[in-house]
Amino acid sequence: MSALIGLQCHLCKTTFPADALYVCDRCLGPLEPVYDYGAVRLTRETIEKRPKNLWRYRELLPIAGEPRTGFNSGFTPLVRCDRLASRLGVRELYVKDDSVNHPTLSYKDRVVSVAATRAVELGFTVLACASTGNLANSLAAHAARLGIECCVFIPDNLEAGKLLGSAIFHPTILAIAGNYDDVNRLCTQVGDRYGWGFVNINLRSYYAEGAKTYGFEIVEQLGWKYPRHLIAPVAGGTLLPRIVRGMRELRDVGLVDGDLPRVYAAQAAGCAPVVRALEAGLDHPEPVRPDTIAKSIAIGNPADGYQVIQCVRATGGSGAAVADAQIVDAIQLLAETEGIFTEPAGGTTLAAAIELIGRGVIPRDESIVVCVTGNGYKTAEVVADRVTTPVRLSRSFREFEAWWAAQGRGSTAAALKV
Ligand SMILES: *Cc1c(COP(=O)(O)O)cnc(C)c1O
Ligand SMILES: [Zn+2]
Image 1 (cartoon, rainbow, N blue to C red):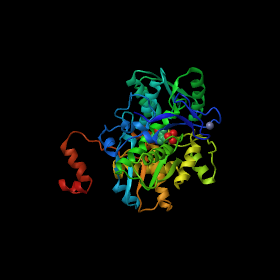
Image 2 (image 1 turned 90 degrees about the vertical axis):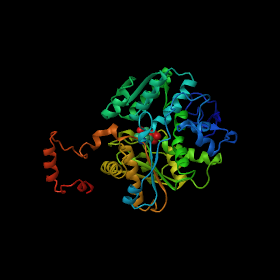
Image 3 (image 1 turned 60 degrees about the vertical axis):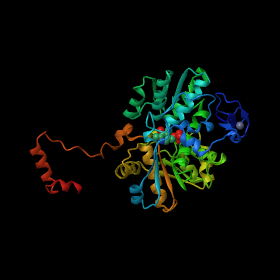
Image 4 (image 1 turned 120 degrees about the vertical axis):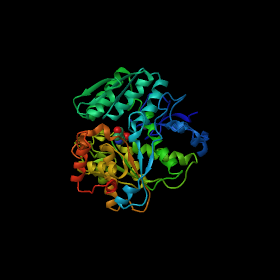
């Protein structure tokens, strides 16, 4: 049912069979699945009738047989944010909200659904990953329901909620003394030597394709239209180019037309190799040593940095790097205006959007999608000193009345409207 034909080098275009390959043996370029788009017979109606999960676009996903997991992953809300829009002085603003993705509350449930399904097809018996937290959470959960052995590698300084989000599923957890880039280097060596299925290393060609579904859904949820502007966070650089690739594919198979959105890369100032490269006119990011509260996107040497830069430029977009204080302010603003609680990655993306609107780069009267990719419950530490503290009372009604009177807001129930 999938239109998958094989893999192809992104740079020199050499073709390969659809195996567990991820770099071109001629030029070391990344490998991407290729599809026979002409063979895809899809209508809007067919897609709309399917279950609300990421497999509704399965013809354009790189699996050979039936999906094995992710039956409730994807198809997250595209929230029209009018209160936030009016605060920012823009006309049409949406949040694509993967903070409520099933089952582990981040965009990683998309890439893992696809990579884990493909890993089973290819016969892997151990699933593994190098992660800044969310990927480990998602892989551990999907491996648990598949009943497959799982081993996650993380930096040893992650937030308590991120660690718990893996630990409850009982994978093997290796907390490495170092940052994500150190963890990734180690995992590449382990993958080569032990033959484990590292979803974001040797299965990366398949993993990355899962991220296209984020783009497919935005187009469908806008009523089969492209937005004009889209701001996405960048860590390793998987998500941003695949949103665009997915959107372009929908046009290639005749489901949408018009111009692709302008796409903007959001990074934390403490780890902004891609934004710096965009600003300096470089093709490849210079690696940096991360120092930011946005740990889930703290990757100093992004695997797909080149692709992000090409993609952003091709759409006419740009980038913005934002300070940690702006990130926390944006988390709070999104919570107070729209009732959405995101982690620092989402705060980074909204803060970057605010910055780009403020600079006049994004016009105020065109449609804007902000990509919110993770959930705030996992990173309670960053907002601990900002949240409302409860008023503590005994069970006595008299004490309640005394407290209310002391508020000076009147004594009737109607006063609550204030
Ligand atoms: C992994 C992740 C991203 C983006 O990572 P890429 O490697 O660039 O795809 C963004 N937000 C959150 C919350 C993440 O966990
Ligand atoms: Zn090549």
